[in-house]
Length: 283
Image (cartoon, rainbow, N blue to C red; front, side, top):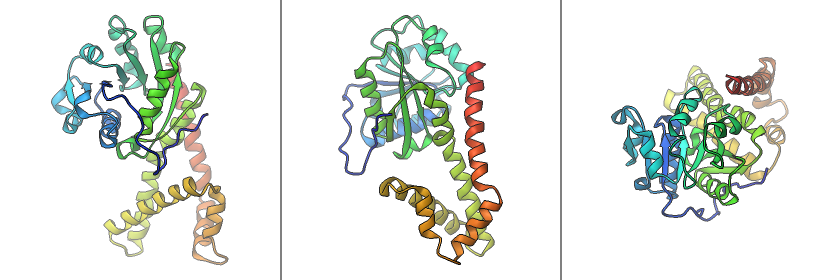
């Protein structure tokens, strides 16, 4: 994988100002990506359009994005088309759009478990297709993205998508075989982190902290830990050891987590999510 990490000192990525981004689907992931693009300045709200059967029910419109019910009109008006629907809906959408996809359209699928080959088989020969694994933290410009190219994708296409996704977090280009595991680690990983924050906050409340303070402190602890891993370059095990003073409170807590199978449970979670993604591909 070639690194394309965004650092605090990195200048604003170069995305052409006339780039028109269209989302097929206006749910949570479309909202997260659109919000991130707008906040970063990579794409203006006026250059984003999304489709939804019930436009007035979509929160994407609250970002200043145009939301319409017509999928084909989104494709006609967009140079970059993001397929942001549930995996089981993707074949239906591709069948609907296959007759109007042209070389001016670049398609990005964020659907878990749907291989590039499957997507390309529904579309005209030579269609420019990429698969992207991204998480909802893109909405706060702290996302994790991996981009995989299709058979007819141009180098300029992948550079544009990497630049676009760098505006909402860190992004790397890599082979498609990584995407299921990437989704299990970082895509699903935000849910694991939310559960950890909630559980830590419950512990704080049990020991006398107010709910608001406990949640804030737990969230900041996880954010700070992640930042230390990324910025110091140290192995997380080393950083953990540096917190564990001999006979101290942290090593006592770590002992409890080890006895409860904390690390094994997280490994099992990543494995389960990856295998589920494989199942979706077969279906």
